[in-house]
Image (cartoon, rainbow, N blue to C red):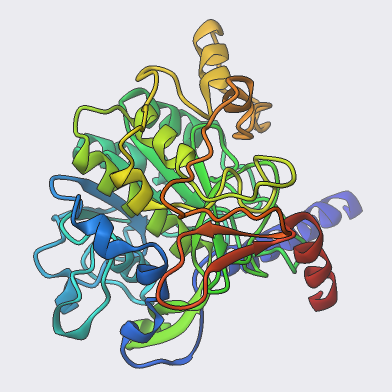
Length: 410
């Protein structure tokens, strides 16, 4: 009896922690900011006007597996495909009760119409796939949502949510199928850095590109979960997000937003280079990322660095590399191919992680510096992404300063 009670209590605690984690992995919203325009600092920082002269994402489909997408937003008119819901409680993928999925879609493909949000890939299309976690747990249909996105022709899949619980081998198999069919899967690293820093799934699964967040200063956002599984980083702090109950725009952010902007960057690169494979698009994102010149690379905080779409689109000497070799997961997929049972069946999580060991072994990527976009002066503050009209985005003493700041705020 007591053993059963303890088991129930343990399960209840796990569910509660997972629920809190899934909420923290979503966008963090504060007071109403009105128009989203005042929070689009990343457009200047990433030099998007120059990037857009080369590509706006035309011809690309980005699947946003999330809470649905509100099709009434002016900036999303003409940008949304039909989509599908895998939530029997809410069958319309073009409805969004709390706004999270709408924010992600706008960050990807918002056109700015009527003063709305401008996404990084305004000529791409968003495939809304409605699926939400229940009580912080991975509800049924998650793997089907991933399969559906690939079946509908999405080359890029954005998963801006997560929980600290391994979702099961069926989800890993769906991620494997997406990779096998040539798609890129991005996910938010999590927002728990000052609340235990628990790793997040699905971003910790092999085959998923985990994205951390930086703020307007260029420093790692206090909330951004860190660890060896972080692959890349993108702007995510102090941005515009839909307010609670999808009522207007608020100030917030999270690694959810960072994942969406990384997905949009992939759409820009792929649109400009339609003959490239997913491996080549990801390799160029890594090769051109802004990262510190001191300390270990990949970093526990920013992975291989912060996305720089303008550099990825304008550099003349970019070598996309082997189309058939993943820059992050080649060891995992080689082991999978050689094994009769590559995905754990016992409910245990996989041994391999997206740590970038394969890329490091190849003595790659290149520095990505060009035309002054990375101004390394040997100091502890190194620009990670190109400076915009305001202050340069700096990454200051990642392994020390950020950690000390987190200790002070915890």
